[in-house]
Amino acid sequence: MKVVSEQYKIGEREFVKSLIPQIIDHGGSMMFWRLPNSDEKNLIVCNSGATVVDDVSLENSKPGFVFAPFIPESKKNFYSADLVFRFKGEEIIEGPDLNNTKYAFQKGAQAKPIEKSSAFYTSAKKSNRPSDYKKLVRNGIQLIEAGAFEKIVPSQFRDVNLPDNFDPLKIFYRLCEKHPNAFVSFLSSPETGTWLGASPELLVSVEGADKFRTIALAGTLPYHAEMNLKAVAWTQKEIEEQALVSRYIINCFKKIRVREYAEHGPRTVVAGSLLHLRTDYEIDMKEVNFPQLGSVMLKLLHPTSAVCGMPLKAAFDFLQSQEGYDREFYSGYLGPVNFDGNSNLFVNLRCMQLFEKTARLYAGAGVTADSDPQKESEEVDIKIQTLSQIINP
Image (cartoon, rainbow, N blue to C red; front, side):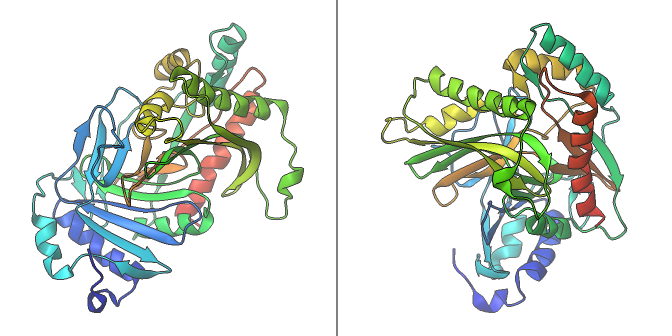
């Protein structure tokens, strides 16, 4: 891998815009992302199609990108980093020799899109519709009061029309601008179609062979620029919701007999136009002598209490039978694996799925015994509206 300066003079945005059609036309896949609080972006091209796996092994994986659906038993898609481009401050700082790029795109590219645009792959739209949200929340509260579970996280989606000359790359850059603290991603492949998102929720991070990190993120309030984060008043419902997510993570540690972990929080954090409560957990993998901790915790954590509920099986069964639609990759996870020796996987939240003329926007809200159906519905509306405004600013 090296920089060929003469071939990269046009700048990041113009270069990526010209690159995407070449990838799509040759049946390749692309993953473009920016980590939270970073001024660097990475784009990988996979020429050989997705490798479908039952479980993700962070320790033994070659560099690439994983995209996993909500249902934990479902197959996960792994995309190898056949070509890597790096960007910083709108400049291209690293990439392959473009003299060989056309050949590289063609080599091994056998998968074909369901429907194709020069800008992105599109999936076939499913006709099912989500259940009435307020009714779904009311049913959940009744079962919580009856002792069936402690928390559920029902979701819904809404389809919005795409404007003429829609460009998903512009959406990616808008998400980067509006969500500096999020993992912003633009993924397009024949197997999955195209997804964009700005996730505030880290699922698993492994830094080299040393550090494991995850977070508990829950509770939602509107955010305004003049707000003092130290003075935000959280209700008992939101505090309890976040505490349940923290308890879920700690219970996962207990299952594998890991007791040496650092816990920081909860604290108030900003995610776009919203506020959340966040607690950070960190483990020194060498200190606990657990080099496979990342892969083990990934399997234990997904789906988390923040996107499903507690206890997991009862909440999952309720959502599968009552939500009325297939979440697909919404509230699954995605991110780079063994990229520069690090793995960073995020829950696929604040995301949209692209079809030929519409985008499907997903959102959910945590429901406990103290929930109010009207307020939970309003929370989902705010989250969906935030995404909609990115498409039609």
